[in-house]
Image (cartoon, rainbow, N blue to C red; front, side, top):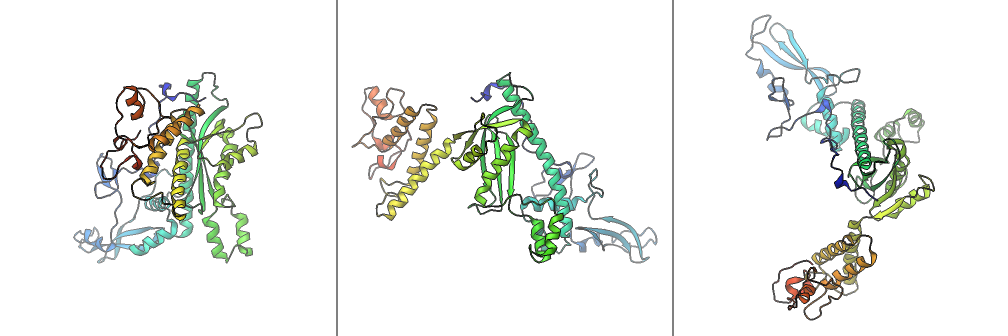
Length: 459
C-alpha cells in the first residue's frame, strides 16, 4: 500500500534538491554571445574569462611611461615559468631592462582545502573536460589547435580527483536530504513510523549504460522512490580505469613486473566490476540493496522494473533482507504496452519475409501509426482497471475489436454500453440513434474507405 502523496501538503521540497553548484565554480549565465560573467563587488556583471592572444598584450601598455626611467618603452611578456596551464605575465621596460610588475594569468581559488590553492583556470578547464567526457586527450588536442601550453597528465589526474571528491560530497548531501524527505512523507502518511526506524519502500529500479547495445565500459543503476520521485541511491559499475590503462601503456603491459608492482600501490582503482556489460544492472542492484539499511535504514521491498526478471531473481536468490521479508516485483505499464508495439512490428516484419504483406502505407495495412494507436489503447485499458484482471482483459479485447471494426463488419460486442461509453457505436445504440460511419469515428486505416477523406478520432 502506497501513501497518497497528494495528502502530504506540508512537505516542502527544497528548490535545489536536484541541482547544486560548487562555490568555487559558481558562475552565472553569460550574455547573448556566450561569455561567462561573474558579479563584481559593486554588483555589476564583469567578464571572468577571455581567450586573448599574447601578441595583443603589449598594445595595452605601449603608451604608458615607465616609473623608473620615464620612457614609454613598456611591454607585456610571457615568461617560461608555468604552472599547469597558467603562465606568468610581466610588465617589462625595454629601456631600463627592469620588470615593473608580474602576475599569474589566472586567479587562485581562495578558501580551498588543498595545501596549494589551485588556479581557477586550471580547475575550470579540468571540470569542463570531465563534464564533456573528453579527458586529458581531448584537452591536449584543444590546446594543440589553440597553440597554448597543456598541463601534465599527473596534474590533470590530481585535479580530477579533487573535483570528484567535491562532487561526491554534494551528491551524498543531496541523497541524504532526499532520504529525509522520503521518511517525512511516510511519517505523515503513517504516524506510527519511527523517525529512525526501518521503512519498507516501493522503488523504481533500472540500469543504463554509457553506450547503446550493452557494450559499454560504464553502467549505472538508480533507485527512485515511487511516492516522491526522488533518487535515493545509485551505483556506478566500471570495467575501465584510466590510471591502470595509462600505467599499462607506460610499463609495457599488465603482465610486466613493473606494472604489477605499481598495481599493488594503486588503491583507488575505478574498475569495480568484471564481466559482461549486460550484467552491470544486476551487480549494481545487489550493491544498492545490500547497503539500503546501512545508508538510510530503508528496505526496498517492492521493485518496479521494466520487465527484466534477472535483477529480481538475483535479489531473491541473495535473500537480502532475510526469509521473512521477500522482495516483490511490479511491472511498469508503459513497458508492458511497449512490448505490444514491439510484437506488432515484429509480426509485420515476419509477415513480409513470409510473403504476407501486413505493414506498409497502403489502405488497411498495419502501419506504424496504427501500431502506435493500438499500443496506446492497450496501455489505457490496463491503467483503467487496476487490480481487476477480468475487466482488464475485456477492455483490451474491446479496443482491439473496436479498432478492427468497419461499416460492413462492426465488432462492438466487447465495448462498454450506455450513453457514457467511449464507443460511438454503443453510445448511439443507447440513445436509439443510427451509428455514424466508422470512417469518422475509428482512428485506424481499416475503418476508412477508399477514396474518402475522413477525420480520425481515437476511442
